[in-house]
Structures are given as C-alpha cells and as structure tokens.
Length: 69
Ligand code: FES
Image (cartoon, rainbow, N blue to C red; front, top):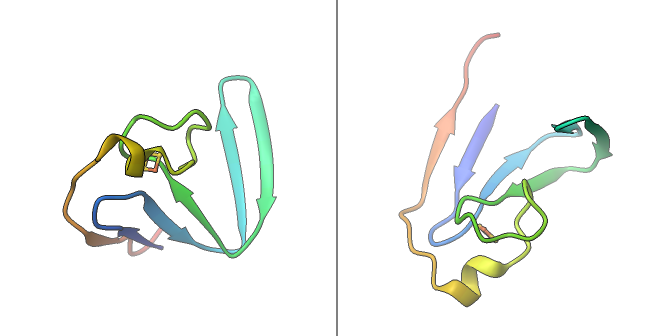
C-alpha cells in the first residue's frame, strides 16, 4: 500500500475497495482512491472535504510505502 501526502493537503490512498469504520458505523467504498483529511478541519472525517484550502493548512508532501502484511 502506498500513501501519498499531498503538499498542503490530504493523504491520497489508492486502492479498489475500502472498509471505513468510524465508531459503530461501517461503510464499504468501491472506488479507485480516497483522500483522507490531515488538517483536522474536515466536516466529513476521515475524508477531506477541501477545508484545508480555506484554513491555509501547510505541510510538506511525501509518501509512505507499506510493505508486507
Ligand atoms: S486535508 Fe482536506 S479538509 Fe483536511
């Protein structure tokens, strides 16, 4: 798995099927990628809703590779 930290923005995760569990709620998403909030300002956590632009969030870009299981 590869995570991409977008400069001044969210974390992009590529995949096909995501199982999101927040509290008691579980949701399955069939899509090629998701964008996770890392600014803390999203009203739709854990997903980015674009708030990072409005609040001027700043962070370096980068990647994280997860190898093995
Ligand atoms: S990173 Fe986009 S709303 Fe937080």
